[in-house]
Image (cartoon, rainbow, N blue to C red; front, side, top):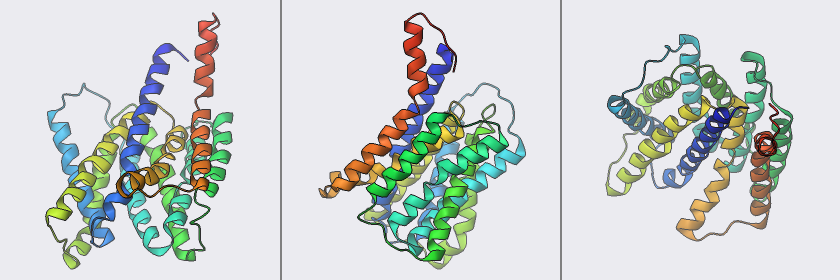
Length: 298
């Protein structure tokens, strides 16, 4: 791997980590809103879409190849359905079940990426997948419960959409993946319109900040960061790195309420973080070799 490739890979990883940090704030701010979940889903996405349009207006991007229509629309619908199914899963099964089953996404990203775009997962990816599932089980051991079969199925579907979304976005690495994210937000708004009419959101001083924060930061900025990252790292690597998102939820709860995570959560979180770091071993080994005068290519 060339020095430039390593720099691009590192930039993509850092962007994905920041993206996961923004994603992780959703649970905290959703709890602040006493709105119908699909109203939150739609209003949040509409704000995110407008934010992305504003960013695009002030940007002066260099000419790039146009997005192919199939990956563009497939990525847009996939991400919209990720958000929709995850909201529904949280209402139909336990929160722990919903998160664990949605984060089957790296498996689907590995398989679909291998099949559709010939990005064969490396040994460290498969190792990380096993470690991550073990870590999630330990992390959520105290809160896992037998959820409703239908709710658990919806959560698995959310994971499939999440993994597929990363692959469809990766297909646009030579174009502009942000177009898919922008479209996904307006698709979400269209889907949610009947619910917004039936359950109009109550705007007040206590609701404006959470919904604007989620629209601009938690979804808007994260969409731009994910679009930037997926052009530089593989679909399965993106999903593996994104698994740090649920680990950060207890951090926000600790910061706001003072509630401390359990020992199981700390152990499970440590395993997951180790798994994510494992995926960086080839690049680290390559850098060490080059400093020693060897120039192996992974």
